Amino acid sequence: MTVYSYINKLLPSAKGLFDDRWPLPFHEELANYNFDTTQIDTLIFYDKQINAYMPVRYIKVKLLKFGQIQYAPLSDGELLSEEEEKLFLDHFIEYCRKKHLFHHLIQSHPSGFTRSFPNSSAYCPFGSYVTNLSLFDDESLLTSYDPKYKKAIAHSIKNGATVKLGLDQLPQFYILYQNSINKAKIYCDSHSSIQTLLRNLGPDKCEIGVVYDGEQAIGAILVQFTKHTAYVTHAGMGGDSKLYGAMKYLHFEMMKHLRDKNVKFYDFVGVRINNKTASLDGIFRFKKGFGGKLNSGYLWKIDLNTSIMKVYNKIYDFRFKDLPHMKDIIDQENLGAK
Image 1 (cartoon, helix red, strand yellow):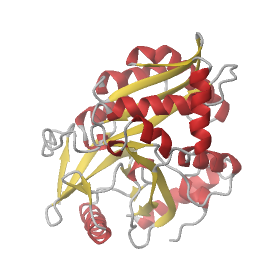
Image 2 (spheres, one colour):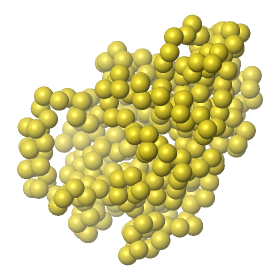
Image 3 (cartoon, one colour):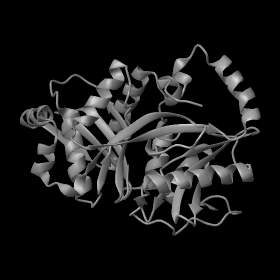
């Protein structure tokens, strides 16, 4: 197995390995953004036997080394068979253990779920709703939605909703995003971090959309993309409005816009398949309503140095025992098996 990096000069360079047929987590621009904001490198693992690559973030916290898979392994920009994927992951785990690269692989990024999981890992079912934009013109795209969505979008259009696209929409986007995230009491990317993201990705790999009721911004999304896939990574809502279909209208306009830029897939980035929480079920149903295919698999994590991680886990569990939101999705779902 060969390990590449865009940042670490001691490793073979990943420059030039990936074009727009590959998802964004493989690309230099996103790796540079992650390093600029967190000093975390993105390593690209290549298995010659399978001819496949997989991006993994390398996170060092004092003496501990963590890895986080950013995307499932791909060959020529395409998913492997389940058998090939399992073999790749087995090779990857064996290599990391042999080279002492990581003490622990934390839960995969939501865009990095896989259709299989290594033996002895903790895991939970996970998936994402994805629309193949290349299959639709404007009318057939709208028809693919839940009928209630189509009606809601028509309502918004009839009542004067407008959508503006462009990175110049950052000020309006960030106000709505920040307000929504703060209400949800979850981590909020700083304004400077979003600015750094836009600077690294630019208009060829990032887009902002804001929907307005008159002059008032009431909904916003930020999408990162290559021609392979667009990912809805940030969103926000706010303000008083009777346009009950505004966010649906915004996604419709963004889908059409990215399709016309030859982006193939539109990914809503993650849903919990077996959740029992009303708010999460609402997110599941919202994303499902856009008519995309549910791609399903697993989030997983695994200790690669069990003795060190046994001590770390005890300390972590004690420190955050009364803070359930500090648990990852796997622990929250409580469906994993070690």
